Length: 294
Image 1 (cartoon, one colour):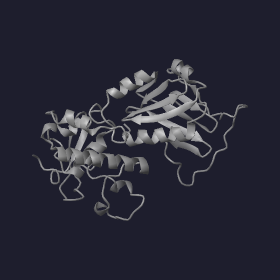
Image 2: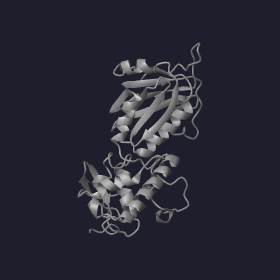
Image 3: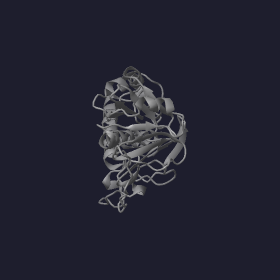
Image 4: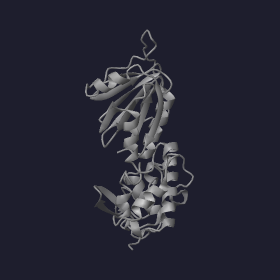
């Protein structure tokens, strides 16, 4: 499941490529036909992300809410070729001359697979496949969804005190709490494990046993990691001094993470074997040496 930085990259990509102009909206699969008819021909006025939710606002006052879930994905196509999840096109990719209709809208290729929603404008198109949620909502309904979410470290309106008020009273482990979107929005399996490692916190520590100083440092670090993810397009949590080649740019994928997917491998800092267990429905990774049990 995409984590928060991906959704913020998507919001920025929609602003850049679809914002300010009329958009044709359809549902080749048919499951979103009614919703598409409400948005078709409207102007996309704003795009924003909150946690793992993407909201696209239209001049009618309606919003398209999308949650990708485990299997959802956007595919983009424009004059620079095909793009995925708003990432820049690959180096060496060739430009594609797209056909246009008499109104100047791009004529996209025939849909491939089960396309829930298709958006087309004068510069490109995008297809949405496999989301767990794709619906048209009112402003009030959008706000109701956001009211149920915890603060998003990437949003200017985030209030970390709200999260602290919840987790500081909880007997639940901090590793499980970080995965709850009503506590902190946008954090997934990778960011929770990596941030706890960087903070030297035992993931099994109950939330109420965390100090305020630990929480403040954890919140700040999560915000920094997420902002790096927005900038880089992928998750990098290792510090340069803990990589085989500290000057490598971009950072090679095998060198980007401290603990995730490294079960049994030596810790990059203390050489202890990385441990893993199931927690909150996902695999939790940590270093017993750098994150000693309480």
